[in-house]
Image (cartoon, rainbow over all chains, first blue to last red):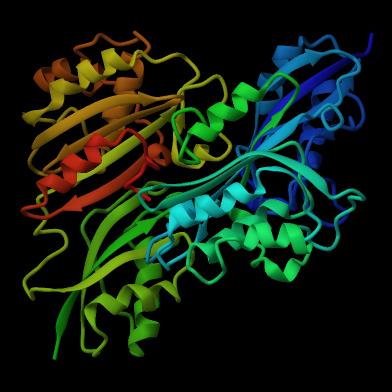
Length: 268
Length: 268
């Protein structure tokens, strides 16, 4: 009997060409599919991920699904796969889902975190998971600016070329910028995102925080649809997909937003 | 004129054979000495580190000193060296010291953190900087046990072979075990440590927290001087040298001890 299994996957994206399979580079999807093939004892098992994270982007809560003929209980896949996966890819949870669950199409939203080390020197340890900004950032100004993206807007200015979206209206449910010591963290919860959208917002906020862009830069770009009103695309290594949300998981999003750090009490 | 310069150095120890130079493997000391040679425009500049951290051990606050004939201002070495160093080694601060300052012999103490991810699965991101324990840990029991090392004791049981110490009395000023979500952090402040001492205490505490060793295991080993009363040597990747202390820096130690996480508000 065919069953559908869902996985919640965490990865350090440093050494991967992103989530989605590539011809000439190693993707996280490929690594998980190969582990699954070993476990199932058959050929390659195609898995469908919720989010095509870019090269170098990290995840604490990517979600994927696959179909299996095996008799392995849903909750055991995580333990079995983790023995076959490299340490920078970990299945945090696995479960049997309804047969019509689809990791991508069933999504109700995503929460991303963008981490900036705001100190004279970059961090040797956290540097792997953050961007570095040596100029002091005005976090209150950044947080005020970030509120302008909340709501449903046409975000067509907030997209890198290479995106495949045909509609540009997306709804942001919440956004915040907060500081904890030398760490500045931008967190955003939206129902959907355009290609590179979070990194473009993060780069813009970094310039707003240095007074190099007006505080209403994001609001203006929503009106003008002009990419030139926005800042640079912040580097991939600072971005972490914290969670993919499905209907009814709003409280999970709010809980993550309440945290101020990438590695905080609840996000290990 | 010869001046003595001190460096506060942070490193991700994953890809290094420890601090101290080795014949056949890359040490952090070598990487810093080579950067310094490039900067000084002469031959290799020998530097003296406060702590010989083991292979795989991390540091947020290693301290080292060297002598220079250059005219580079003390506080500029950090910026200049960081342009020459790999991203997993960062000079956090540099300053000119008194000519009789010695990074190792002037030390008044050190603070170490040992991080454990206490969850069914290891962490893909924090895994680089932590040990993993899937069995739920009784943190109150661990913290109570840890208090037994506070004070001046003969720690001869708490030493791996290979250590060069000839005296075994060391003074621990404070120790604590605390939980923040899935992260369990053991922090210890001592005036000096024996070879592998922190990792042996961490491994013992992990067994105390699982009720696999009595709560007084550390106190007993202090009395018996018997390594067999203690647990395993916890893996290097969980250990971080948070700070090397010099006379008058007790408040810095207390501040770090008040934090509950490796990557917290003040330790970026």
